[in-house]
Length: 369
Length: 105
Image (tube, rainbow over all chains, first blue to last red; front, side, top):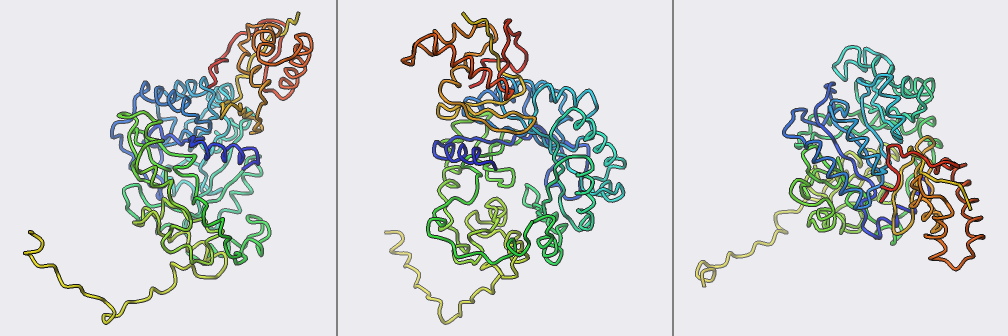
Protein backbone atom coordinates (compact mmCIF):
# COMPACT_ATOMS: atom_id res chain seq x y z
CA UNK A 1 0.00 0.00 0.00
CA UNK A 2 1.38 3.44 -0.89
CA UNK A 3 2.10 5.76 1.99
CA UNK A 4 -0.53 8.20 0.72
CA UNK A 5 -3.14 5.45 0.65
CA UNK A 6 -2.07 4.44 4.16
CA UNK A 7 -2.53 8.04 5.24
CA UNK A 8 -5.99 8.17 3.66
CA UNK A 9 -6.89 4.81 5.25
CA UNK A 10 -5.86 6.13 8.66
CA UNK A 11 -8.06 9.17 8.10
CA UNK A 12 -10.96 6.98 6.99
CA UNK A 13 -10.49 4.80 10.08
CA UNK A 14 -10.62 7.83 12.33
CA UNK A 15 -13.73 9.19 10.60
CA UNK A 16 -15.43 5.77 10.36
CA UNK A 17 -15.65 5.88 6.57
CA UNK A 18 -15.88 2.69 4.49
CA UNK A 19 -13.10 3.52 2.07
CA UNK A 20 -13.20 0.18 0.28
CA UNK A 21 -16.08 -2.18 -0.58
CA UNK A 22 -16.22 -5.47 -2.43
CA UNK A 23 -19.59 -5.92 -4.10
CA UNK A 24 -20.33 -9.34 -5.53
CA UNK A 25 -22.70 -8.79 -8.45
CA UNK A 26 -23.61 -12.45 -8.77
CA UNK A 27 -22.67 -15.85 -7.39
CA UNK A 28 -23.43 -17.46 -10.75
CA UNK A 29 -20.32 -18.64 -12.54
CA UNK A 30 -19.27 -20.18 -15.83
CA UNK A 31 -16.49 -22.15 -14.11
CA UNK A 32 -16.83 -24.75 -11.38
CA UNK A 33 -13.54 -24.38 -9.51
CA UNK A 34 -12.98 -27.26 -7.14
CA UNK A 35 -11.99 -24.97 -4.24
CA UNK A 36 -14.73 -22.34 -4.65
CA UNK A 37 -16.51 -21.26 -1.46
CA UNK A 38 -19.74 -20.19 -3.16
CA UNK A 39 -23.12 -21.69 -3.94
CA UNK A 40 -23.60 -20.76 -7.61
CA UNK A 41 -27.39 -20.81 -7.71
CA UNK A 42 -29.21 -17.50 -7.99
CA UNK A 43 -31.26 -16.97 -4.83
CA UNK A 44 -32.59 -13.56 -5.88
CA UNK A 45 -29.82 -11.20 -6.93
CA UNK A 46 -30.28 -7.47 -6.58
CA UNK A 47 -31.80 -5.88 -9.68
CA UNK A 48 -30.05 -3.27 -11.81
CA UNK A 49 -32.03 -0.51 -10.09
CA UNK A 50 -31.21 -1.86 -6.63
CA UNK A 51 -27.49 -1.99 -7.37
CA UNK A 52 -27.46 1.50 -8.88
CA UNK A 53 -29.23 2.81 -5.80
CA UNK A 54 -26.69 1.04 -3.59
CA UNK A 55 -23.82 2.57 -5.58
CA UNK A 56 -25.35 6.03 -5.04
CA UNK A 57 -25.52 5.32 -1.30
CA UNK A 58 -21.96 4.04 -1.20
CA UNK A 59 -20.64 7.13 -3.00
CA UNK A 60 -22.46 9.32 -0.47
CA UNK A 61 -20.93 7.25 2.35
CA UNK A 62 -17.43 8.00 1.03
CA UNK A 63 -16.56 4.66 -0.55
CA UNK A 64 -13.67 5.21 -2.96
CA UNK A 65 -12.31 1.79 -3.93
CA UNK A 66 -15.06 -0.43 -5.32
CA UNK A 67 -14.31 -4.02 -6.29
CA UNK A 68 -16.85 -5.79 -8.48
CA UNK A 69 -16.51 -9.51 -7.97
CA UNK A 70 -18.53 -12.72 -8.00
CA UNK A 71 -19.22 -15.45 -9.21
CA UNK A 72 -18.39 -14.28 -12.69
CA UNK A 73 -19.30 -10.60 -13.09
CA UNK A 74 -19.57 -10.74 -16.88
CA UNK A 75 -22.51 -13.13 -16.56
CA UNK A 76 -24.64 -10.16 -15.52
CA UNK A 77 -26.28 -8.79 -18.65
CA UNK A 78 -26.30 -5.34 -17.05
CA UNK A 79 -22.60 -5.45 -16.13
CA UNK A 80 -21.51 -2.55 -18.33
CA UNK A 81 -24.53 -0.50 -17.29
CA UNK A 82 -23.52 -0.97 -13.65
CA UNK A 83 -19.88 -0.24 -14.41
CA UNK A 84 -20.81 2.96 -16.25
CA UNK A 85 -22.92 4.03 -13.30
CA UNK A 86 -20.08 3.31 -10.88
CA UNK A 87 -17.59 5.28 -12.95
CA UNK A 88 -20.02 8.17 -13.31
CA UNK A 89 -19.91 8.27 -9.51
CA UNK A 90 -16.10 8.39 -9.77
CA UNK A 91 -15.37 5.16 -7.90
CA UNK A 92 -11.93 3.64 -8.31
CA UNK A 93 -13.20 0.38 -9.83
CA UNK A 94 -11.33 -2.90 -9.62
CA UNK A 95 -12.66 -6.10 -11.18
CA UNK A 96 -12.19 -9.73 -10.21
CA UNK A 97 -13.00 -12.13 -13.02
CA UNK A 98 -11.97 -15.33 -14.72
CA UNK A 99 -11.99 -13.23 -17.94
CA UNK A 100 -13.34 -16.12 -20.01
CA UNK A 101 -16.08 -13.92 -21.49
CA UNK A 102 -13.91 -10.88 -22.25
CA UNK A 103 -13.39 -10.19 -25.94
CA UNK A 104 -11.39 -7.44 -27.66
CA UNK A 105 -14.33 -5.01 -27.82
CA UNK A 106 -15.03 -5.52 -24.10
CA UNK A 107 -11.41 -4.74 -23.25
CA UNK A 108 -11.64 -1.51 -25.22
CA UNK A 109 -14.83 -0.57 -23.36
CA UNK A 110 -13.22 -1.32 -19.99
CA UNK A 111 -10.32 0.95 -20.87
CA UNK A 112 -12.64 3.78 -21.94
CA UNK A 113 -14.51 3.46 -18.66
CA UNK A 114 -11.32 3.91 -16.65
CA UNK A 115 -11.24 0.59 -14.80
CA UNK A 116 -8.27 0.67 -12.41
CA UNK A 117 -7.31 -3.00 -12.63
CA UNK A 118 -8.55 -6.50 -13.31
CA UNK A 119 -7.60 -9.51 -11.22
CA UNK A 120 -7.79 -12.72 -13.25
CA UNK A 121 -7.65 -16.17 -11.65
CA UNK A 122 -5.01 -18.40 -13.25
CA UNK A 123 -4.21 -21.67 -11.48
CA UNK A 124 -1.49 -23.06 -13.73
CA UNK A 125 0.40 -22.32 -16.92
CA UNK A 126 -0.55 -25.85 -18.03
CA UNK A 127 -4.05 -26.25 -19.52
CA UNK A 128 -4.43 -29.76 -18.14
CA UNK A 129 -3.93 -28.47 -14.57
CA UNK A 130 -5.82 -25.14 -14.83
CA UNK A 131 -8.78 -26.68 -16.65
CA UNK A 132 -8.92 -29.58 -14.18
CA UNK A 133 -9.40 -27.00 -11.39
CA UNK A 134 -12.00 -24.87 -13.21
CA UNK A 135 -13.61 -28.05 -14.62
CA UNK A 136 -14.02 -26.20 -17.94
CA UNK A 137 -11.98 -27.51 -20.89
CA UNK A 138 -10.30 -24.67 -22.77
CA UNK A 139 -10.70 -22.18 -19.92
CA UNK A 140 -6.98 -21.37 -19.59
CA UNK A 141 -6.72 -20.45 -23.26
CA UNK A 142 -9.77 -18.21 -23.07
CA UNK A 143 -8.52 -16.47 -19.92
CA UNK A 144 -5.10 -15.91 -21.45
CA UNK A 145 -6.62 -14.59 -24.69
CA UNK A 146 -8.56 -12.10 -22.58
CA UNK A 147 -5.43 -11.02 -20.71
CA UNK A 148 -3.84 -10.32 -24.08
CA UNK A 149 -6.82 -8.17 -25.12
CA UNK A 150 -6.73 -6.30 -21.81
CA UNK A 151 -2.99 -5.71 -21.96
CA UNK A 152 -3.21 -4.49 -25.54
CA UNK A 153 -5.59 -1.81 -24.29
CA UNK A 154 -3.10 -0.71 -21.65
CA UNK A 155 -5.16 -2.07 -18.75
CA UNK A 156 -3.55 -3.22 -15.54
CA UNK A 157 -3.96 -6.97 -15.05
CA UNK A 158 -3.07 -8.99 -11.97
CA UNK A 159 -2.95 -12.78 -12.13
CA UNK A 160 -4.25 -14.33 -8.91
CA UNK A 161 -2.84 -17.79 -8.30
CA UNK A 162 -4.35 -19.82 -5.47
CA UNK A 163 -1.96 -22.49 -4.24
CA UNK A 164 -3.54 -25.92 -3.79
CA UNK A 165 -2.51 -29.56 -3.80
CA UNK A 166 -3.48 -29.79 -7.49
CA UNK A 167 -1.23 -26.96 -8.68
CA UNK A 168 1.45 -26.62 -6.02
CA UNK A 169 4.27 -27.40 -8.45
CA UNK A 170 3.13 -24.82 -10.96
CA UNK A 171 3.47 -21.44 -9.29
CA UNK A 172 6.94 -20.79 -10.80
CA UNK A 173 5.39 -21.50 -14.22
CA UNK A 174 2.51 -19.10 -13.54
CA UNK A 175 4.95 -16.41 -12.44
CA UNK A 176 7.02 -16.91 -15.59
CA UNK A 177 3.84 -16.69 -17.65
CA UNK A 178 2.88 -13.45 -15.88
CA UNK A 179 6.29 -12.00 -16.63
CA UNK A 180 5.98 -12.99 -20.26
CA UNK A 181 2.54 -11.33 -20.43
CA UNK A 182 3.81 -8.24 -18.61
CA UNK A 183 1.33 -8.50 -15.75
CA UNK A 184 1.58 -8.71 -11.97
CA UNK A 185 1.10 -12.01 -10.16
CA UNK A 186 -0.05 -12.78 -6.63
CA UNK A 187 0.15 -16.13 -4.87
CA UNK A 188 -2.35 -17.02 -2.15
CA UNK A 189 -1.88 -20.21 -0.13
CA UNK A 190 -5.22 -19.86 1.69
CA UNK A 191 -8.18 -21.96 0.61
CA UNK A 192 -11.23 -20.71 2.48
CA UNK A 193 -14.16 -22.71 3.82
CA UNK A 194 -17.48 -22.38 2.00
CA UNK A 195 -19.71 -19.51 3.07
CA UNK A 196 -22.18 -21.93 4.66
CA UNK A 197 -19.41 -23.18 6.96
CA UNK A 198 -18.67 -26.38 5.02
CA UNK A 199 -14.91 -26.90 5.45
CA UNK A 200 -14.40 -29.61 2.81
CA UNK A 201 -12.62 -27.16 0.48
CA UNK A 202 -9.94 -26.48 3.12
CA UNK A 203 -8.57 -29.99 2.54
CA UNK A 204 -7.45 -28.82 -0.92
CA UNK A 205 -4.89 -26.52 0.67
CA UNK A 206 -1.21 -27.42 0.56
CA UNK A 207 0.38 -29.23 3.49
CA UNK A 208 2.79 -27.53 5.93
CA UNK A 209 5.86 -28.98 4.18
CA UNK A 210 4.95 -27.26 0.90
CA UNK A 211 4.14 -24.04 2.75
CA UNK A 212 7.60 -24.14 4.34
CA UNK A 213 9.21 -24.39 0.92
CA UNK A 214 7.08 -21.58 -0.50
CA UNK A 215 7.94 -19.27 2.41
CA UNK A 216 11.63 -19.90 1.77
CA UNK A 217 11.46 -19.15 -1.94
CA UNK A 218 13.43 -15.92 -2.24
CA UNK A 219 11.79 -15.17 -5.60
CA UNK A 220 8.51 -14.81 -3.70
CA UNK A 221 9.44 -13.41 -0.30
CA UNK A 222 12.69 -11.57 -0.93
CA UNK A 223 15.03 -12.11 1.99
CA UNK A 224 13.81 -15.55 3.16
CA UNK A 225 15.84 -15.43 6.37
CA UNK A 226 14.23 -12.15 7.37
CA UNK A 227 10.78 -13.30 6.22
CA UNK A 228 11.01 -16.49 8.27
CA UNK A 229 12.62 -14.95 11.35
CA UNK A 230 10.93 -15.37 14.72
CA UNK A 231 9.20 -12.04 15.33
CA UNK A 232 10.19 -9.67 18.10
CA UNK A 233 7.92 -9.39 21.10
CA UNK A 234 4.90 -7.20 20.38
CA UNK A 235 4.99 -3.68 21.79
CA UNK A 236 2.14 -2.68 24.07
CA UNK A 237 0.93 -0.18 21.47
CA UNK A 238 0.59 -3.04 18.95
CA UNK A 239 -1.74 -4.84 21.32
CA UNK A 240 -4.07 -1.85 21.07
CA UNK A 241 -4.21 -2.12 17.27
CA UNK A 242 -7.09 -3.55 15.23
CA UNK A 243 -6.72 -6.97 13.58
CA UNK A 244 -7.45 -5.90 9.95
CA UNK A 245 -9.51 -3.48 7.87
CA UNK A 246 -12.68 -5.64 7.89
CA UNK A 247 -15.48 -3.57 9.39
CA UNK A 248 -13.09 -0.68 10.02
CA UNK A 249 -12.50 0.81 6.57
CA UNK A 250 -13.78 -2.02 4.41
CA UNK A 251 -16.77 -4.29 4.01
CA UNK A 252 -18.45 -6.69 1.63
CA UNK A 253 -21.90 -6.75 0.03
CA UNK A 254 -23.37 -9.97 -1.42
CA UNK A 255 -25.52 -10.16 -4.58
CA UNK A 256 -28.54 -10.39 -2.26
CA UNK A 257 -27.76 -7.12 -0.50
CA UNK A 258 -26.35 -8.63 2.68
CA UNK A 259 -23.54 -6.63 4.25
CA UNK A 260 -20.64 -8.40 5.97
CA UNK A 261 -17.38 -7.08 7.43
CA UNK A 262 -15.46 -8.89 4.66
CA UNK A 263 -16.00 -11.52 1.96
CA UNK A 264 -14.17 -13.94 4.26
CA UNK A 265 -16.13 -12.88 7.35
CA UNK A 266 -19.74 -14.10 6.98
CA UNK A 267 -21.16 -12.29 9.99
CA UNK A 268 -24.47 -10.75 8.82
CA UNK A 269 -24.69 -7.08 9.77
CA UNK A 270 -27.72 -5.93 7.75
CA UNK A 271 -29.27 -5.87 4.28
CA UNK A 272 -29.29 -2.88 1.95
CA UNK A 273 -32.69 -3.96 0.65
CA UNK A 274 -34.14 -3.03 4.02
CA UNK A 275 -31.71 -0.46 5.44
CA UNK A 276 -29.51 2.31 4.14
CA UNK A 277 -25.92 1.23 3.56
CA UNK A 278 -24.57 3.99 5.80
CA UNK A 279 -26.92 3.03 8.64
CA UNK A 280 -25.68 -0.56 8.55
CA UNK A 281 -22.09 0.64 8.43
CA UNK A 282 -22.45 3.07 11.31
CA UNK A 283 -25.06 1.50 13.55
CA UNK A 284 -25.12 -2.27 13.16
CA UNK A 285 -24.38 -3.97 16.49
CA UNK A 286 -22.31 -6.59 14.69
CA UNK A 287 -20.13 -3.99 12.95
CA UNK A 288 -19.66 -2.26 16.28
CA UNK A 289 -18.63 -5.52 17.90
CA UNK A 290 -16.07 -6.25 15.16
CA UNK A 291 -14.76 -2.70 15.51
CA UNK A 292 -14.38 -3.00 19.26
CA UNK A 293 -11.85 -5.86 19.06
CA UNK A 294 -8.20 -5.07 19.68
CA UNK A 295 -5.30 -7.55 19.55
CA UNK A 296 -5.19 -7.61 23.34
CA UNK A 297 -8.83 -8.83 23.39
CA UNK A 298 -8.14 -12.04 21.46
CA UNK A 299 -8.49 -15.27 23.38
CA UNK A 300 -5.23 -17.09 22.64
CA UNK A 301 -3.18 -14.83 20.40
CA UNK A 302 -1.91 -12.21 22.90
CA UNK A 303 0.40 -14.83 24.45
CA UNK A 304 1.57 -16.17 21.07
CA UNK A 305 5.10 -15.64 19.73
CA UNK A 306 3.65 -14.63 16.38
CA UNK A 307 1.17 -12.01 17.53
CA UNK A 308 3.10 -9.06 16.09
CA UNK A 309 3.31 -10.31 12.50
CA UNK A 310 0.69 -13.05 12.18
CA UNK A 311 -1.64 -12.91 9.19
CA UNK A 312 -4.55 -13.97 11.43
CA UNK A 313 -7.84 -13.50 9.61
CA UNK A 314 -10.72 -12.65 11.96
CA UNK A 315 -13.16 -13.97 9.36
CA UNK A 316 -11.52 -17.39 9.26
CA UNK A 317 -11.48 -17.34 13.07
CA UNK A 318 -15.20 -16.51 13.02
CA UNK A 319 -15.82 -19.47 10.71
CA UNK A 320 -14.02 -21.65 13.24
CA UNK A 321 -16.49 -20.46 15.85
CA UNK A 322 -15.00 -17.39 17.54
CA UNK A 323 -14.11 -14.06 15.94
CA UNK A 324 -11.79 -13.40 18.90
CA UNK A 325 -10.13 -16.78 18.57
CA UNK A 326 -7.21 -17.94 16.47
CA UNK A 327 -7.47 -18.81 12.82
CA UNK A 328 -5.90 -22.25 12.54
CA UNK A 329 -4.91 -21.77 8.90
CA UNK A 330 -2.93 -18.68 9.85
CA UNK A 331 -1.41 -20.46 12.86
CA UNK A 332 -0.18 -23.08 10.41
CA UNK A 333 1.27 -20.39 8.16
CA UNK A 334 3.15 -18.80 11.08
CA UNK A 335 4.47 -22.22 12.05
CA UNK A 336 5.53 -23.02 8.48
CA UNK A 337 7.30 -19.67 8.27
CA UNK A 338 9.25 -19.75 11.53
CA UNK A 339 9.18 -23.35 12.75
CA UNK A 340 7.76 -22.14 16.07
CA UNK A 341 4.32 -23.52 16.94
CA UNK A 342 1.66 -20.89 17.62
CA UNK A 343 0.05 -20.69 21.06
CA UNK A 344 -3.03 -22.29 19.52
CA UNK A 345 -1.01 -25.29 18.37
CA UNK A 346 0.53 -26.04 21.75
CA UNK A 347 -1.09 -28.90 23.68
CA UNK A 348 -3.99 -27.59 25.71
CA UNK A 349 -3.67 -27.84 29.47
CA UNK A 350 -6.17 -30.34 30.71
CA UNK A 351 -8.14 -29.52 33.81
CA UNK A 352 -8.11 -32.45 36.22
CA UNK A 353 -11.41 -33.64 37.59
CA UNK A 354 -10.30 -32.85 41.12
CA UNK A 355 -9.88 -29.18 40.30
CA UNK A 356 -13.39 -28.70 39.00
CA UNK A 357 -15.46 -26.82 41.47
CA UNK A 358 -19.02 -28.04 41.58
CA UNK A 359 -21.56 -25.71 42.99
CA UNK A 360 -24.71 -26.95 44.60
CA UNK A 361 -27.79 -26.27 42.51
CA UNK A 362 -30.08 -23.65 44.00
CA UNK A 363 -33.19 -25.17 45.39
CA UNK A 364 -36.39 -25.05 43.40
CA UNK A 365 -37.98 -23.16 46.24
CA UNK A 366 -35.41 -20.35 45.92
CA UNK A 367 -35.77 -20.23 42.15
CA UNK A 368 -39.51 -19.74 42.35
CA UNK A 369 -39.34 -17.20 45.16
CA UNK B 1 -9.46 37.05 -19.48
CA UNK B 2 -8.62 33.35 -19.68
CA UNK B 3 -10.08 31.18 -22.40
CA UNK B 4 -9.17 28.01 -20.60
CA UNK B 5 -11.81 25.38 -19.89
CA UNK B 6 -11.22 22.49 -17.51
CA UNK B 7 -12.75 19.03 -17.18
CA UNK B 8 -11.71 15.98 -15.17
CA UNK B 9 -9.97 13.27 -17.13
CA UNK B 10 -12.82 10.73 -17.48
CA UNK B 11 -10.44 7.89 -16.62
CA UNK B 12 -9.59 9.07 -13.13
CA UNK B 13 -11.37 8.12 -9.91
CA UNK B 14 -12.06 10.72 -7.26
CA UNK B 15 -13.57 11.03 -3.81
CA UNK B 16 -13.55 13.74 -1.20
CA UNK B 17 -12.37 12.58 2.23
CA UNK B 18 -12.72 15.11 5.00
CA UNK B 19 -12.39 17.97 2.51
CA UNK B 20 -9.36 16.45 0.77
CA UNK B 21 -9.90 15.27 -2.79
CA UNK B 22 -8.33 11.88 -3.52
CA UNK B 23 -7.62 11.19 -7.17
CA UNK B 24 -6.57 7.81 -8.54
CA UNK B 25 -5.27 7.66 -12.06
CA UNK B 26 -5.87 4.12 -13.23
CA UNK B 27 -3.18 3.56 -15.82
CA UNK B 28 -0.42 3.80 -13.26
CA UNK B 29 -2.56 3.33 -10.13
CA UNK B 30 -1.14 6.56 -8.83
CA UNK B 31 -2.93 8.23 -5.95
CA UNK B 32 -2.89 12.00 -5.59
CA UNK B 33 -4.47 14.28 -3.06
CA UNK B 34 -5.37 17.84 -3.97
CA UNK B 35 -4.93 20.88 -1.77
CA UNK B 36 -7.85 23.24 -1.14
CA UNK B 37 -7.30 25.40 -4.23
CA UNK B 38 -6.79 22.40 -6.49
CA UNK B 39 -9.90 20.79 -5.00
CA UNK B 40 -11.93 23.89 -5.89
CA UNK B 41 -10.60 23.77 -9.45
CA UNK B 42 -11.42 20.08 -9.68
CA UNK B 43 -14.94 20.50 -8.35
CA UNK B 44 -15.59 23.43 -10.68
CA UNK B 45 -14.15 21.74 -13.76
CA UNK B 46 -17.37 21.22 -15.71
CA UNK B 47 -15.88 21.80 -19.16
CA UNK B 48 -18.17 24.80 -19.68
CA UNK B 49 -17.14 27.45 -17.15
CA UNK B 50 -14.01 29.40 -18.16
CA UNK B 51 -11.16 29.46 -15.69
CA UNK B 52 -11.40 33.20 -15.03
CA UNK B 53 -15.01 32.76 -13.88
CA UNK B 54 -14.02 29.87 -11.62
CA UNK B 55 -11.27 31.99 -10.11
CA UNK B 56 -13.54 34.98 -9.63
CA UNK B 57 -16.53 33.10 -8.23
CA UNK B 58 -14.91 30.24 -6.34
CA UNK B 59 -11.39 31.31 -5.36
CA UNK B 60 -11.29 35.11 -4.96
CA UNK B 61 -14.50 34.94 -2.96
CA UNK B 62 -12.85 32.60 -0.43
CA UNK B 63 -9.22 33.65 -0.33
CA UNK B 64 -7.68 37.04 0.17
CA UNK B 65 -5.88 37.20 -3.18
CA UNK B 66 -5.73 39.63 -6.09
CA UNK B 67 -7.76 38.33 -9.11
CA UNK B 68 -4.89 38.62 -11.62
CA UNK B 69 -2.47 36.80 -9.33
CA UNK B 70 -5.08 34.12 -8.52
CA UNK B 71 -5.80 33.57 -12.21
CA UNK B 72 -2.11 33.20 -13.03
CA UNK B 73 -1.63 30.70 -10.18
CA UNK B 74 -4.78 28.81 -11.16
CA UNK B 75 -3.62 28.51 -14.75
CA UNK B 76 -0.24 27.13 -13.64
CA UNK B 77 -2.01 24.68 -11.34
CA UNK B 78 -4.47 23.61 -14.04
CA UNK B 79 -1.66 22.94 -16.49
CA UNK B 80 0.24 20.97 -13.87
CA UNK B 81 -2.83 18.83 -13.18
CA UNK B 82 -3.21 18.39 -16.93
CA UNK B 83 0.41 17.26 -17.23
CA UNK B 84 -0.40 14.58 -14.65
CA UNK B 85 -3.48 13.60 -16.69
CA UNK B 86 -5.84 14.48 -13.85
CA UNK B 87 -7.51 17.38 -15.66
CA UNK B 88 -8.20 18.13 -19.28
CA UNK B 89 -7.42 21.72 -20.28
CA UNK B 90 -8.65 23.27 -23.51
CA UNK B 91 -9.19 26.67 -25.05
CA UNK B 92 -12.62 25.46 -26.18
CA UNK B 93 -15.46 24.20 -23.97
CA UNK B 94 -14.99 20.49 -23.31
CA UNK B 95 -17.86 18.17 -24.08
CA UNK B 96 -18.74 16.05 -21.07
CA UNK B 97 -18.08 12.36 -21.49
CA UNK B 98 -18.93 9.56 -19.13
CA UNK B 99 -17.95 9.52 -16.28
CA UNK B 100 -19.69 12.83 -15.92
CA UNK B 101 -17.69 15.71 -14.55
CA UNK B 102 -19.08 17.38 -11.49
CA UNK B 103 -20.67 14.25 -10.09
CA UNK B 104 -17.72 13.39 -7.90
CA UNK B 105 -18.76 13.46 -4.30
